[in-house]
Image 1 (tube, one colour):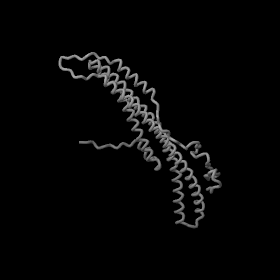
Image 2 (spheres, one colour):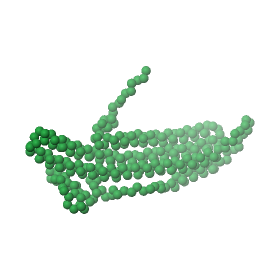
Image 3 (tube, rainbow, N blue to C red):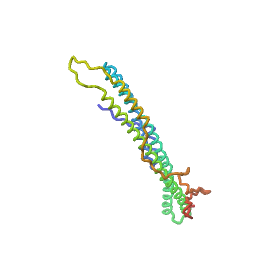
Image 4 (tube, rainbow, N blue to C red):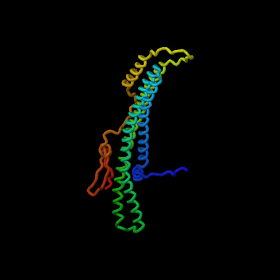
Length: 277
């Protein structure tokens, strides 16, 4: 009889449910990327382990050619595993940049919620007492809430676009590097295979001595040289998001806060602008 599936509630689950609505989707994506990175790291470790097992097996065959070539093939496979680990490290850098977008989304949610609450309070007050003096105070509060939201939304769109390009610049460059280096290793691995004589023997025949040890070593030397000489050839990612201040706004913009928490947003180069106070 199958056991019922247990749904475990853990701290990670709790953090997911506590995320602001605005950042829940990116939070989930970042968490999924973490699982993917773990998989690449595990694949790298497995590849290195397999390389060692291949070498051990080749040595146990008693066939000098198989032993030598399987050992050198293992060296290439182990290097492939190292490339998986390097790729995982680069993906972690990309993932950390996505977190900056998520954190900005989380910081914007309160401004949206605050504005929504004020609008709701105004509607309730209009129904309860359209002539109440409290409406004046609420209307002023709404002006401040709208100004704060305007700034927060501008910050969000700025950081989202900039960091999205920055994150996937790293991701895609790492993917190209991993692919091109894996190709280098695989091509040299195929050179090794051609050094193995697989001419069928009939019973009683003996195979000639293995004479390609020097060539096999040269294959590894060539592979190492090609990896060291590898250079990225990438289309550059253009970015106009330069010079943003600590408030994530361009230098031509200013965000001012008055004595009573009043927020205004002004753009210096476009002349006088209406300012919410």
